[in-house]
Length: 513
Image 1 (cartoon, rainbow, N blue to C red):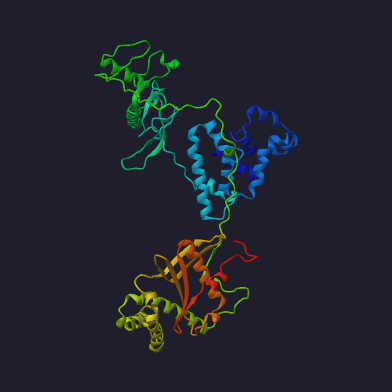
Image 2: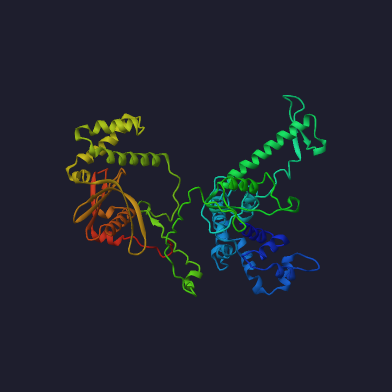
């Protein structure tokens, strides 16, 4: 992780000599310390400028590529390009640092994604956010690892391993006592720090304080021994080196000496330089499970495509909404109060057409008036009566009975990709699906109804043609019939195949998807 952060610091401030040096000797670039020391000496000036003057461009090409992307890429893009791009940083880091490096790398990428989702992404802000300690990367120390892990007894609490080696078990707990003690001059008084007196200076009230501190330290010493000795799953090795002060004899209170006394009590014989205890009743060895062998080719190489960047994804087409096919080449004036009233009337009529077909015919007028008064927010009884009469007249008309039967779908969403690549997405007012045909009807709630097909506005025709074309893709092999129901008549105008074909959706010459 520090290697990746050093890269960000370098591209933000190339004249920071420490960041340049750290990046050069990192696994990402791969210089040795000797190569850096040979290239770094100079009379004056930043290290980066000196390297640009003295080193060949091919040797500095990776650093120049990083600088070229610093002002363009987001933090996540920049890091991912370092790891998966031509530099092949992920493979280099894991090869140098081992598989343990994978977790910090992935967590750093996750942190970059989190940062980009919460603020404007930039490398400078990400580095500041990261350095302020807003990110905490926690690794799972109990995960199986094909490596030797060096830990303190404190850090090993809760962990286990097949083989545990206590490599410093001959340490004397009394050899390095705490130099500062806490002493309360009077009962109940706040303790004050005092220096531990020498052995010849002990006495008086401090002697009890020193004795209590030594007792606590010795108890903690044995508690840590219990922790360390119980971490092994299969084998525990207790060892250590003796210093000149020990004179060849392990200290009495050392873990090694305590283990030796325990083995003596168990009558474990002394072997060749070591004592081995396999238990009061030795257990048979665990038979290792046979693992499937994987044959690896001697000169296995990745295919060429694995080293190439993935192609850019094609930009998806912009969905076409048939209900918004009106000509918008000319800007419309702001809606007047009358236009707002008309729009609200149309919304209420559509809502009633969706709700009333399931209501018994004698009860529709009452139910519609009640819904308009409560849910619709129409306080004027005359306005409610006019809307109710318009809707009930259409529902009670035998010509339209099939459109409002239980087999039709109300406010049905449809979406399809046409043969020319356009995506049509919208919601139809009524959809009737039969084994051999599909009928689609859209309601128009204006106060005037066209007298014939020739009087229907062009954008209404284009809208229904788009719906029909999408349904022909969704239901291949079935005929599609489209119609417009103008509630002011009421009048149902069926669109023939010639009209639908003439208004089939297509791209305009200047339109981009």
